Image (tube, rainbow, N blue to C red):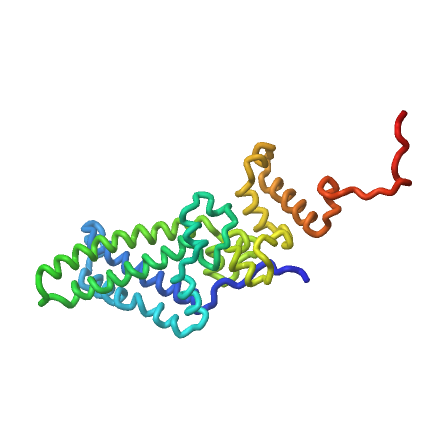
Length: 275
C-alpha cells in the first residue's frame, strides 16, 4: 500500500476556534494601541467607538473556545494542550530538541506553554478589563491596581503573540495544518513523531518506510550531520535526497548495501589462490 503524503491534523472546529480567537485578539490589541498610544489615537479619533469595540471584542474573546467545547475533536485538542509529559519536559531542557528524536505528541512543549500563557493572560485581561469598564464606583485602589495589571499583561500578551506569529511565519507546513487541516507526512514524522506514528500505525523511527518526498528532503537538508556537512555539497537538498534514498533502499532491501551484510559465496565461486 502506498503510504499517504498528508495526514489530518486539525478538525474544522479547531481551526474555526483558532481563527475566531485570532481575529478577536487582533481587534483587542489594535484598539488597545489606539487607546494607549496618543499618535495612534489622534490618527483614528472616535475614541468612544474604539472603547466600545475594545470592550466588546474583549468580552467575546473567550466565546470561540467555549463554543469549541461542543466539538469532540476540539475538546481532545484542549486536553492534549493541558497535559505535560516527560517528553515535554525533556523537550524544554534540550537545545537540540528539534534533532533529538524525542517522542513529541500532537503539540510540543512550546505550543503547550504558549496556549497556557495565552489562556491565563486572556483571563487576567478579561477580569481587569471588567473592573476598568464597569467598576467606576468600586474602590480607587482596586481600579488603579487593575489598570496596572491590565496594561502590563497586555504588553506581555503582545510579546507572546509576536513570538507566535514569528515562529509560524518560519514554518509553512505548520501554517498549512491550521489553514487546510492536513500536513505533509514528512513534516509530521519530523516535528511530532509520536503523534504521526500513532496515526500511521507505525513505530517511532520507521520513517524510512516512507517515500523520500520533498518534505522529508527539506527537513533532512536542514538537519545534516557535521560529518555530512564536512563532505561538502553545493546542493544540500540533493545531498539529503541521496541520503534518504539510500536509507529507504536499505530499509526495503538489506542486500542493497553489501558492505553491511555478510557476503555469501560457494567454493565454486571462489578464485584460485595466488602462488
